[in-house]
Length: 125
Image 1 (cartoon, rainbow, N blue to C red):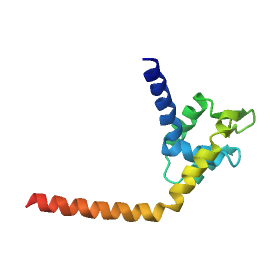
Image 2: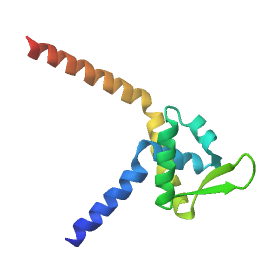
Image 3: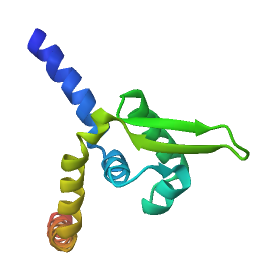
């Protein structure tokens, strides 16, 4: 029973750090401290709400720290905690892998979708 509990906890943590937005945030914050608008600008396709949810989750898990500066207008910056910094290598490697294989993955998806359409057409007859 104990092993199952550990596996569930590990899966929960992997769900957080392994999702597509968290990996990108960790990778970017591994390069420098950033403001919310900078992160939003750098992460293509992320909504404001999703970035907020992702940052809050990473902060809750102790991976990201949020610093609010008492100035007008308020300035908020995000950076990796020391524990979060240990994720940089893994996150950066996965992001680089995805970027370098993007064309191959697109081609594989197109081929798969064409086969699926072909099979659906055959089954519809």
